[in-house]
Image (cartoon, rainbow, N blue to C red; front, side):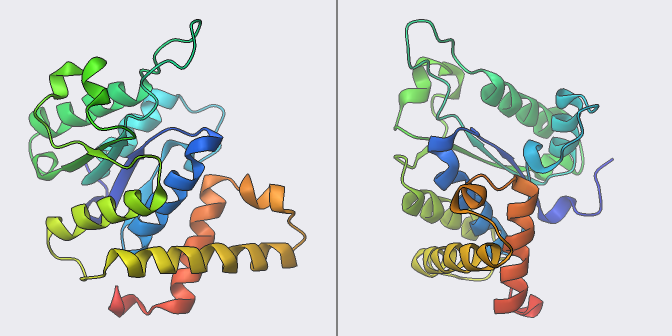
Length: 212
């Protein structure tokens, strides 16, 4: 059974490496800016929790989802494809197709870094409208913003405004945390749940709930 937050929760399935951080942070902020609740596997630190069980729980409790396949390729001769993200995408599609109500209402956005590259590793997705962000958080925000607007029922906010707000948040977040003794390295390595907390704080200080 889906949770009470199902209608505003977004499961975010994406890479966690350092090179992807700017994309991930911008996507999380964009979702919060539109009043949505990002759900991501790294949001909690429970060593006793089985990861797959956590992923399934997030999928079941999220009406929306964003899957980024940018790391499905190997980068060296001794490196394997990273299959977690397409596997979780498959779980989500299965939930949507076979789960019945309310899971048939699920809406899914699939992202990649390079256009059409996913077809080499996941040819079953050929024909789907997969968006490429080119490793640029500006493009990622614009793409996610356009997807959210296309879902219907959300405030009409331009991509440039979301990006400007995100950059304002980054400056505010650095100032606030440095006051508490955080180094720049600490801020860059902020855990996901703490980052989401700071984004929520910025939102509460800049926008009333009724404006979202």
